[in-house]
Amino acid sequence: MIENPVDSWVTGQLALALLAVDPAGLRGLHLRARASPVRDAFLDGLPCALQPIRKITPNLSDTQLFGGVDIAATLAEARLVRSTGILAEPCRLMLSMAERCHAELAARLAQALDGAGGHSLILLDEGAEPDEHAPTTLIERLAFSLDLDGLRAAELAQIALGQTEIEAARAHLSDVVIPDDAIAMLTVTAARFGITSMRAPILALNAARAHAALGARSCLSDEDLEIAAQLVFSHRATQWPDQQDAPAEPQTEPEDDTPDPTSQDESQSLDLPEDLLVEAVKALLPPDLLGALMKTGGTRSAKGTGGAGAKRKGNRRGRPLPSRPGTPGQDSRIDIIATLRAAAPWQPMRRKAHPDAKGLLIRPTDIHVRRFQEMSDRLVIFAVDASGSSAVARLAEVKGAIELLLADAYSKRDHVALVSFRGEGASVLLPPTRSLVQTKRRLASLPGGGGTPLAAGLKTTAELARQAQSQGLSPSIAILTDGRANVPLDGRTGRAAAREDAQRMAGLLTGQGWPMAVVDTAMRPQADLARLAQQLGASYLPLPRADARRLSTAIGSALEA
Image (cartoon, rainbow, N blue to C red; front, side):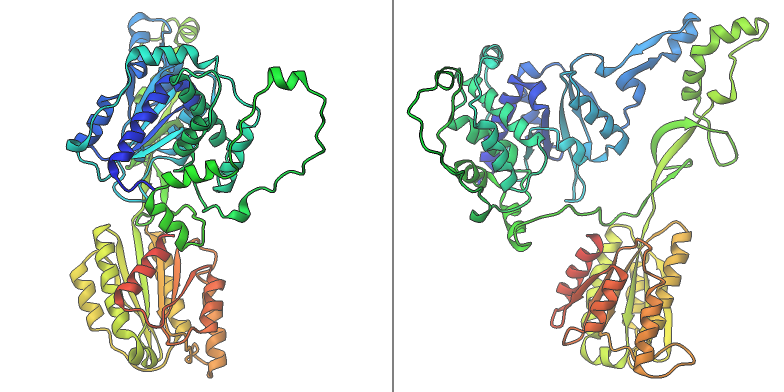
């Protein structure tokens, strides 16, 4: 594993050299680093072969990307003038603030990388949190990924190759011979690390060819395949390969003493040990990935974007989206530029039909309206069991855990709300708010004692969540209880009725798509709560002996998963 950050710098320098040799085949590099002297030093070392590089931003329009009508030139010259887009010719692109790239732009860039245009892309990912990262659709298409976290500029030195060496390797690239079993070995190695996309073996093969060309070798060697597998597979691994994952050895057939002149002259093969590439990739896996894989039993999965509400399409504020044809009204704004762009090509034809008309001839079909993508605020609802059984056992730890969660929610500018259920019913102890002081004051005064009206708590929580959603918030719900429901809704009696009412009220929360967690605070896990969590589609967290910090960590992870 790479424990010395300087080693990752050397790896990045090698990746840049290979990218300079074959930019079209390797597609590009994902660079995760905040703006710093270290990142500046790395970008200053870009080989001349990758120059000139075109810097783009996430607000790039389709016209800038693909070309289209040049409004200013068309109006000035009274004829249709089209502009040339960035992707008209093979180019080297650098996308800054890639973590802010919206899905539409990511899809267009991915399509360009998949095509035969010969484009390459460097993603500058400046995400501050683990869930803030460049679009995976773009990262998947780039051969290399590098994280410069932990590096200091004083420790670094440029190891860039000269232009002459790069040009010689480029000229030699097409002459590199690929052994017959190289593709199979790379594909099997990728599969053992849980990499299902066939892009990875193809990129690794291109990286191996570029490395062989740098060494002026006419055929891929063991070293070329090892380095390529390390650089391309290490950041894509989703599972820890076990020995049983290795493919079974093929059955050997009786040897034929008759020589095959075709195999001797036209094909070459490698004599690599079975696990050599696997061990090579293991050596370059990041330490945090290994720890995550071990904790999850050898696999990992993508997480959602915690701490943020749902995306909504609007026309008032938020991140701009491409304009669309529409009808102007009280709640919509006309996109003047897009409207003129749509109308410009038709001006000569319309002018002939209406020679006496003055000014631009605009039709209703030309009108485009602005669109924006808003992120709705998240509301974290804590439904807390304050009954007698819970108060005696765990209410103090629950209060401490919620205070820690409240501080985290406050830092993310989330709204929080508090529902308490005890005695004969439930009540909203704290409506949705961002006031940390007010929330802590209400939480400290939370009384304990009485029965456990779980059904009433679920009903009140569902009503509050629906009301918040109608106001534009995205609810997330954490239910903390010991599960001993013994108070049914009005007009019924008995524990059995209380459990039935709880299951029935859970139906109000089911299927809404809200992140939910059911925290079992009883000293022994309750089967009823496990079934309730399954019905809700929520995470079930039996935490009988967890302190406040462990409770808050578990709940936060469950709501963000």
